[in-house]
Image 1 (cartoon, helix red, strand yellow):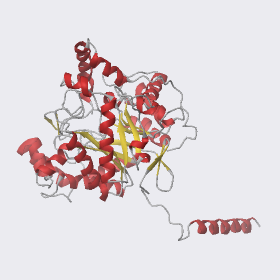
Image 2 (cartoon, rainbow, N blue to C red):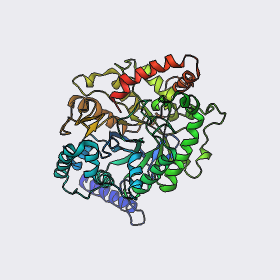
Image 3 (cartoon, one colour):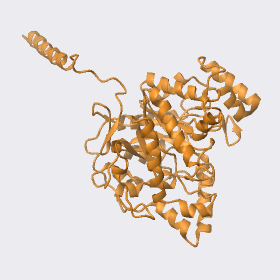
Length: 474
């Protein structure tokens, strides 16, 4: 009798399943885009919640080629990302790559030329030979954009989303307020070239089935290489003007992708956007109507680097409160403007103590608990060239120098992988966050410094802190 009951139940189950799997109800296929937003959530085309969990892969340094290919194949590198359950790669690029495309008669340059330009004839040739040995589909005619295409294709094959990040204008190491890439109108940050670059990459990425989102700009900061310009230009009002230009450029070229908005103070503050307060020195406030036809494509991103110049805070309540005030309040119904939030950069030196770092522990407890997305800085263990040093080691890289293994496996196994799993488990109570929200803006304090009589002394302190910390990580 029990056997008959089990068979009857199985028959009923199969009948129900056949109804829901009928040809009239097509089954969703990965990545099931385009994505949209609904209040604090990112959703796929079926309305299912999507949370980004991933890692940064730099492609914006001098050679303007995704790093590490002289050591490993693209397939091997992407497989590492997939092995810990991550679903996203934040792939960085420089506007200069697109500038060179247009300067070269609308034709990209080959990786062979890019490498010899960046590394010299001997160094470039050596690295090029290693890259094509590891990636035999490449040859002397392969261009930089074709390498980006190959990375996107392999990510799609392994079901990993690509998020394109406009990291810098003039290719190289990022970021300081003195590098000429800090703010719209800075020495290398030409606004027209920037919007052209966003449009180009948005259009180019249409052929990537897994290009789900793009950023407007990485780590906007005071352009302190020109004090007079910084005093007049660095403001929320100018931020809003240019954010609308960049967002329009992306959406016009590719209406499918989400658009990530980064804040001031090296992307550590988005409070006026979330709280709906004045975008100073003007009186206007953030208004979704200014993004006509694609207000449901906007996502906020923040960075957390309180460990940049030394150990970060170990009090998790303080860490949480700072994130809430900076913009994580956007995940709650207490926000004037609700948005999805992604922590697109944070990280630490990958060593024997990484798994016990209290600050990173706080971040990896809090951010997943509220189902905010995150992407750790960074994947690779070395660069083709960084700040004039070829084959420079990256101690913050998850992978070893030759990209062959985890640099700190106890951190990856004991901290990172569990955080991935927690993040991808939707918490129905994550619409309510504890923490203060005093509307104070870190960027507003920087703006006040720029306008004050004591600016020169404050500038010295600010530049010293950044020189000690920001020059050591992206």
